Length: 273
Image (cartoon, rainbow, N blue to C red; front, side, top):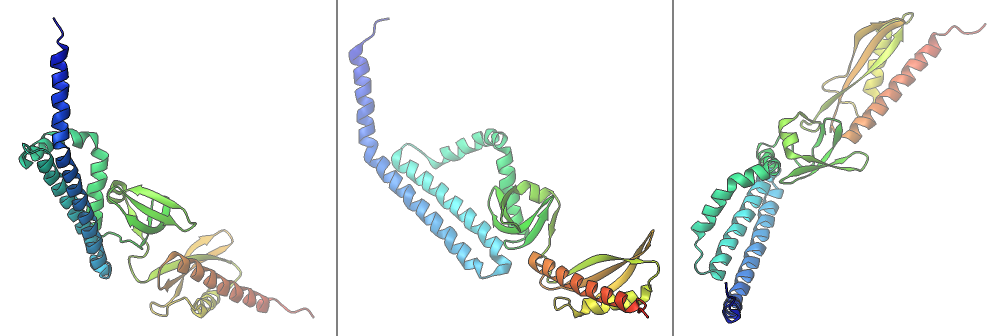
């Protein structure tokens, strides 16, 4: 087979000439896409900002902002391709996306699963940004709900990223779902002590704590027996239910109860002659 150098050079020259002829159109297409990209980001920020003041619809705003951003960017891609390639028809892109959708679905199954889970989390709102949640051994404050994962800031200042599919299909405890939260703590009372007297003292001590709500009222219940006596459980309610309030209230209640029990034991001891 004879190789014709002139024919090859003509082909290369034709390709270069064609590219140079289309170069202005490519530049215009890039500028148009950049404009659509900027518009998409602006629309997302406006929608998010508009719904940020409405706590009830804040997550819906995030979903609508992301969907609007994606739709505008897709429209920008199609308009840019029509400008750069006059023979291109938008139906061709839709056809290609339909054919490649199955392959993309298998290749990026986990990513798509997390994306859909993120959208459903934002729409159903099992928890919101700012809530304190517990997932398996991780507990902290929800900082971001992205399309792939949710970022949680733990109480000791670490950032944990959890896939949205795990949050959507697993068990999530929302500690701040309600305005009030009940706390409890068990105290051991020896056999020789008056249980009813200790119960009254403990209730009075719990009520003295500033963080304890009067309604519902605190209570002390007999919940168990051990070898040396009984177990009394103190239960009380606090508001708000954030982690720092939980730790602070427990510290305050335990301090009050311990002081009351110690004082009662000192009074019960026989005085030396």
